[in-house]
Image (cartoon, rainbow, N blue to C red):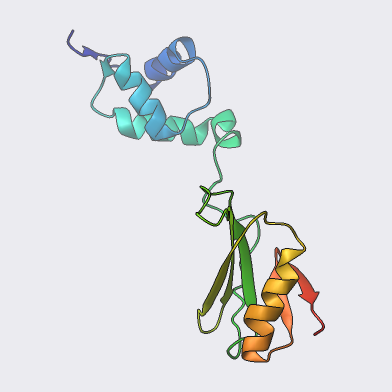
Amino acid sequence: MPFRHRGGSSHERSTFWSMRWRGAHQTGAKLHFQIKRMRYYWPTMVKDCMEYAQSYKPCQFHANFIHKPPEPLYPTTPSWPFDSWGMDMVGPMPESAEGHVYLLSAIDYFSKWVEAVSLLCGKKEEVPSFIKSNITIMWEEEGSFQLHQIQYYLPL
């Protein structure tokens, strides 16, 4: 089936859109795609769809704002090695030969040094022993650890 040419003035096109177009308030590119999918075409269709979407208030109100962050982002940079650590628990994973199902990892944000250990059940009681045996004793560091934006101070 060939494309139908829908020429005429912009008033006729806006009447066509108001009568024919129902549903969500689309952006100009999506509106162009939907009209083209209905097998309509006119030479200035892309420009007209963009102008229509920009001038129609409900289309602007329901538009996505996914590219705008909710607030300004401020990067935090560590000043020296082993100053700031990040931790993550991964799992459950397929069981290993020893029966371990979880993986606990810690990374130093300055040097990118990684320490990891596999765990049987991934309980919160296993985390302090991992920190004491793999980080504080090895590096003789007693400091703060960032866990989901909460600081925990661990005494030795």
